[in-house]
Length: 107
Image (tube, rainbow, N blue to C red; front, side, top):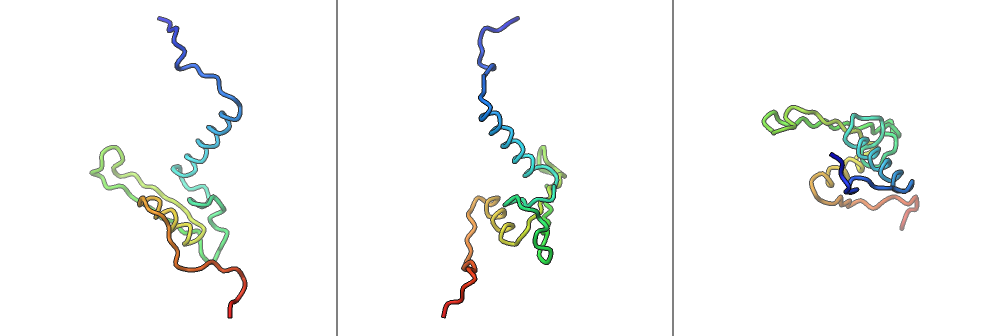
């Protein structure tokens, strides 16, 4: 049986294909096993050796349907990146009460 509908057939431009490939790569980086990059900013997770990499491991309880017992591990380069990621996972927005350092002192 052949279909005359070409709903499934779609011609995509190279830019659309590259955008889809980049999105797939980013999604895999975020949900796949740790690859040494920060789970929030994408920089190397060990770029500040005195701080990180910071590793977070989440284990899904066994009684959760489909995902029970799975473990998710993420690496972060700073506490700030970890905070951003945690806030996003909780459906919120990261808020910092510390002003970023500009290298200048105010008197």
